[in-house]
Amino acid sequence: MAGLTALLAVGAAAASSDVQLEHHLGRAGDLKSPANEAMAFWDRFQNEFQEQAAEKFADRFHPFSSLSWSLRMEEDDTSAFHDRTTRGARKALYRSFTHGLREASVDLPLMTWLKERQGVLADFLRNSIGNVREEAVSPQQWSYRAVERSWWGRLAEDSGLRYGVRPFRTAPYAYASIGIHDGENVLLLANVRYVFRDFNEHKFEVALSVPLAHGVALDVGASYKVDRHDEGQQVVLKLFKQRDNGSLFYVGAELLHQPAVYAGVCFAL
Image (tube, rainbow, N blue to C red; front, top):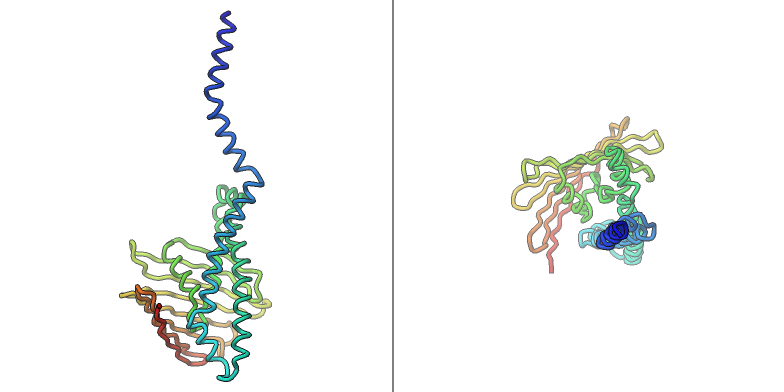
């Protein structure tokens, strides 16, 4: 009888913890389930694709972008303008898809496992595969780019060093970027690239963004091609004034290679 009582007591204790035990096992099983991980990846991709598409299309069809297109074409060449608009839409859609995949991939279980064991290597891979908005930084272009401004804004929120490589390009490069803060104030945002094409053309690119007073920001871009002193240097200045109502004042200037000034005002409706 004593043995039977002990057996019933053990059975009752097991029954009382059965729900809690199954709950913990179920959570662990969910984390390791390939189906659940695939669903989580799909959710991340959908979110990233929507965000990337909104930024890419806003960048491609921003009034300043349309203006810069028209400035490069003849006044009566409307067919070329429409063709370029179509190509711009296709390119924006393609980049939204590929960049969404890349950003969703940086949170795969392998990357999480690597982050726990090799933090430096994991950061390098994450910033090489992801951080796709860094590719929009254009130190040699004096035209306005909305995605570039979005990336500077994200870098301003993070004071850490980011570094990586972009190998799958016609002109691969390695980069490093950092935001320098004084408390909550942003002093300087910087992005440096070493670009190499066909292993015989080497170039350094430096992009700086300095927040000024009253919502004004000054960007400075410079590039230098090694062994091409006559035409390898370029300096670009960009000045922004963003208002709370969404309107934007912009001035861009190229100083050395082909001096030019570009200015515009965009009003929010």
